[in-house]
Length: 179
Ligand SMILES: CC(C)(COP(=O)(O)OP(=O)(O)OC[C@H]1O[C@@H](n2cnc3c(N)ncnc32)[C@H](O)[C@@H]1OP(=O)(O)O)[C@@H](O)C(=O)NCCC(=O)NCCS
Image (tube, rainbow, N blue to C red; front, side, top):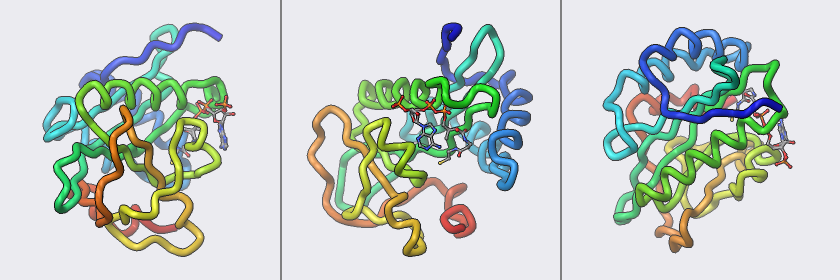
């Protein structure tokens, strides 16, 4: 396996990302959300986002976004991981896991305490995520998706009080939270 390079995305990555997302998600158009987030304030959370790309020999092979979140009554810095995409021909070679690991390391260094994700628990448990029951997602999930709402705590941070996560406006679309 050639070396995977992970770095923050740059404006010139957009064309490659516009090819990556339809290939990784043939049944879902996440590009409007990705474009909107990449056009938002840059920076490592609060108020910016964290956008990382993976490349192998200068070929863009994967992308992950982390966006800032909030919780009423909690000063803790929180983030949500979404979306994550690895080019089909590069899947199952550790790229997704490397993007998550790099992102969580950067977030921990930036003082983020907890990171949330809605996704397949069979996949995200490999990166330390566990089902989250105290902090609710912004929209109620269908029963069969309950185990898909997960979190990981960074740096031994204590769990925040129960509540409902607030997310960036671009995520406030019910269609993004249901089958
Ligand atoms: C899901 C996805 C991001 C995984 O990326 P990847 O680079 O193929 O995954 P990795 O090779 O880093 O796998 C990391 C671990 O998860 C396991 N794994 C990979 N895909 C898996 C899957 N679909 N289900 C369960 N486990 C999986 C690997 O075996 C590996 O295990 P290990 O830690 O014991 O070695 C990628 O397949 C993808 O982009 N899929 C389409 C888009 C998508 O579904 N994105 C996620 C949205 S929530």
